[in-house]
Image 1: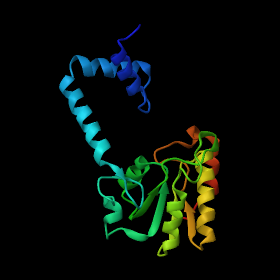
Image 2: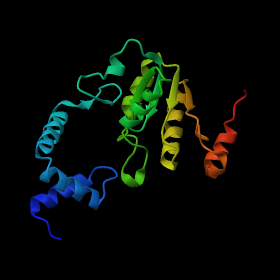
Image 3: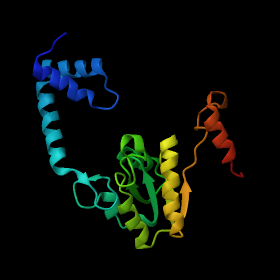
Image 4: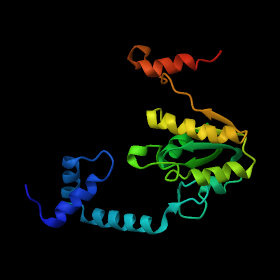
Length: 198
């Protein structure tokens, strides 16, 4: 079916969101235009306000409205630990675990030369400046367990090791509540090689 130009533009804009396909985008657009006009106005205003006010933290690159995000500005955080993650959503996930009290650096991606993502695009120069400041004891690499995430972690570990810093990688393995028979071979192999004494 051929939509009016503005409706087609709205549907296409909604498709830019992760996990939203053509049918979902169409349903969202129809909902916003049919019953949710006030909700659509609120959404548009919130998006406009966020685009105007939210920017990367000047230290860690997490989204913030001030120069420093709440984590970087907090004196209660452990300044000797720096956890490197791929996305702002990863910061949220680690924070929700409640088990980490250090600081972060957000890469906004991973090394992927085919996609034009090299060290410059990941802010490696800014990360190196933090590493060179001194005061860090450990660089924790919490990139995703993908080929690109592993390559990124290896590259960043080399930067830390050249500066005499300890570099560690988050553990990967069998999830709590998971059953071994359903775990893929790569995950199980990593879990076995990273086993710990009890």
